[in-house]
Length: 113
Length: 114
Image 1 (tube, rainbow over the protein chains, first blue to last red):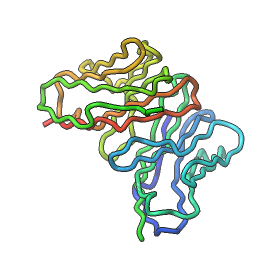
Image 2: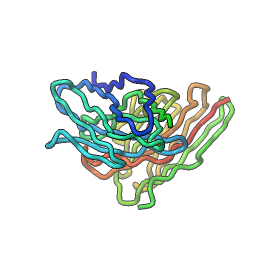
Image 3: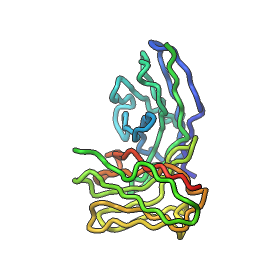
Image 4: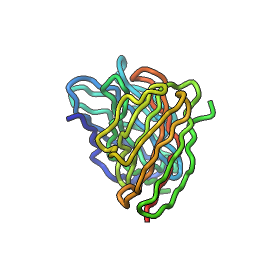
């Protein structure tokens, strides 16, 4: 079955520290992969996406993600976290022509000052 | 690009009542999706339209749920005879064609069934 796993439910980092959020997918081929951020009261905002080419993709707000086929992973990183990055982060993939998304359960990021 | 809008933002209803939500997608997007998100979970796909045609429905979408997209513009999601288990955030998203375009999400409608 196709699925996305985000092993960390909740992560706390200090402002200015680096961040890595984990995402693993299960699919027989290479899916299209996405990271979204959801702040309280806000809709989901697309941070970045990967579907081919360079395995290191750059996104908005200083985020990047690296696709590793051998590990079926698509981890999100940021070198220096800001307090405004506190939010819920979702990894998602699509595999079919309809482009519907399959989401992970999300990782809640807390940033301490 | 005015974004995806959803109305109402919040809805409280009593069990057994019918509710209807509206989604206005980005005007140039021909694909429209509905998702449901419960606490502590990621959004789950409900249904999808390309223009006015409803092309896919999830098994999550029971007979009490119906969605329409007349004229391929806005969409409505109706839940009949609501149950407490229907309490969730209902998210609408739109996209242009192609798997790699990504979804643009609306702010969602939070439904509480008492």
